[in-house]
Length: 89
Image 1 (tube, rainbow, N blue to C red):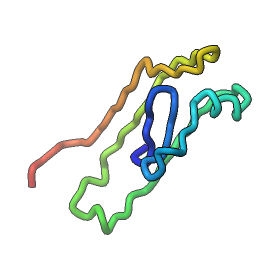
Image 2 (cartoon, rainbow, N blue to C red; image 1 turned 30 degrees about the horizontal axis):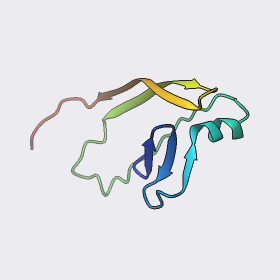
Image 3 (cartoon, rainbow, N blue to C red; image 1 turned 90 degrees about the horizontal axis):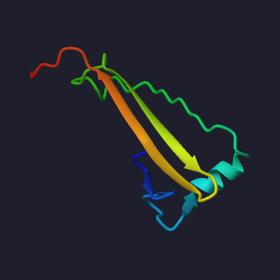
């Protein structure tokens, strides 16, 4: 999400803010089916040599979609981080 701008009921790219897509169009293109994603990645161990590699985190966002008005409201956003013991080297 660091490359995206969420504003109102629209999403655009930071590099090209003029390229705006409404959530209503995204839902219509998906034929009203649920939109879900799960993303995972493995960090580059050489770049993170000084950082913790045992931290785990999860993010979840709950939204309400008003199809008639084309409005998406975020009702809840939760982030959980299990970083283990934090020490100052």
